[in-house]
Length: 320
Ligand SMILES: O=P(O)(O)OC[C@H]1O[C@](O)(COP(=O)(O)O)[C@@H](O)[C@@H]1O
Ligand SMILES: [Mn+2]
View 1 (tube, rainbow, N blue to C red):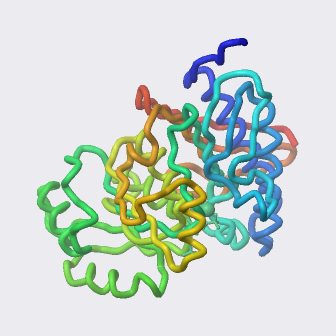
View 2 (view 1 turned 90 degrees about the horizontal axis):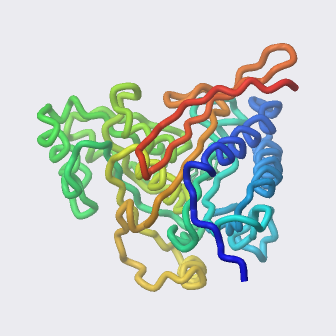
């Protein structure tokens, strides 16, 4: 039997960038058209086509849904040409479908790849998330702390006042109490309407984005992708799965999860080397959105490798 090639992150990384670029390009014509489903479907189709061109034996571990719901890029779907290393793929073809439909900032196409068996098979439930950027100890802020304690602890570690900290939070009624508590510290709160993968990534580039910390609940699949991004950029990430009912607990059991109360660290969500690519769909603080000019679409992609901590920003001018 032929031996399976090793996961060679350097060789695979450019291919991964092509996947996220093409997903973004496919959704370009749907930016600001009020149709989230169409924008998502265009990105999904393109991402799947491109993935199948890569020389990998890939399995989607974070995808568009469960197999019985029969979406494309379902969890467990095999992708790639079938020749090459055995890899786990985590993807969100359009992270910020509503942002895209409404032409609001920070919509991205996102994909991460690591050796087979290294990423948490997170079910499509919510995850409580907490993230800070690089340069702090692992226990600087923890899930055990209250939201206010986290702000004060980060301010102390940073050597600034709580009022100099900016926390990014998804604007949702479920976060009202947390936001009220954060307000008591004097910290600023950047409320976002969607897109917590970008929200978490913003912590790793605080000088550019102004965001020091991310907290609150959002999609668990997005949590694994955010952990992959921070593994490349540096920074701490904690995630705890949240279950609202037995159906959700059943989904977790099916995904092989036994401990429902566990707080996962960044490196428990993504255990091995990982490569991560995200392309801007609409303009954002990390990457520019798609630019149109007659005959061309230009994208910007951030491509990162955890092994080396390398971060590339690539523009791609694509004739259309
Ligand atoms: O809208 P909800 O249910 O609060 O879920 C939050 C999740 O939805 C998003 O805002 C948008 O995700 P999609 O565009 O992929 O649907 C994520 O960034 C976030 O994790
Ligand atoms: Mn998403």
